[in-house]
Amino acid sequence: MEILQKENPILREKAQEIDLEDISSAKIKKLIADMKKILEKQENGAALAAPQVGEPLRLFIISEKISGDEKTIHTIYINPEITKLSKKTEWMEEGCLSVKGIYGKVKRSTNCNIVAYDENGKKFTRGAGGLLAQIFQHETDHLNGILFIDKAKDLQQEEK
Ligand code: ZN
Image 1: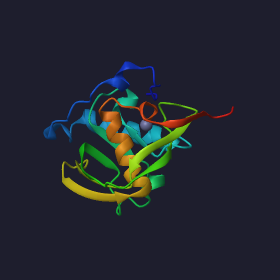
Image 2: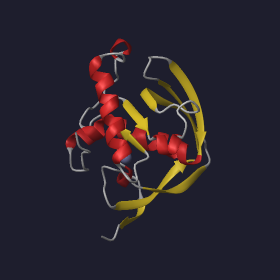
Image 3: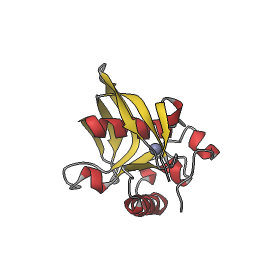
Image 4: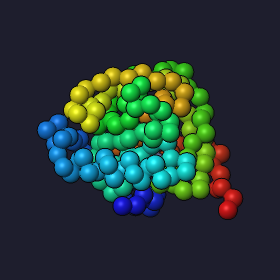
């Protein structure tokens, strides 16, 4: 399993919802386990959406490096939906594992609410600000075929 790069058409698809009864299936369990493994290997990976590993499904995971203790924050978001975005926005520095070496600024709401299912099929709601709110918006964009470079300004190539 590898992380697809920006030219790959799967990244441009609108991802499909996962049937709730499939959440406990071997296929989805394996997908989540594989995504966790690949994300934790990345130096700068905050989160990873299923389309980035070639599965156009509405699922993303957040790195435990960001979320800290799994008990205090959900790390797996299935069929997520942003239900509220603050009017207040900010240009935030952003990058993406599927757009290696390029960074830019994206205008994001500073706060948002998200509703999703966890890996046990339990529905939950979470509000977030700052980095976590930015991640929710970035990852939800992935599920809709949007990459941050579509909306970014001041794009810069990292020096090698
Ligand atoms: Zn990304």
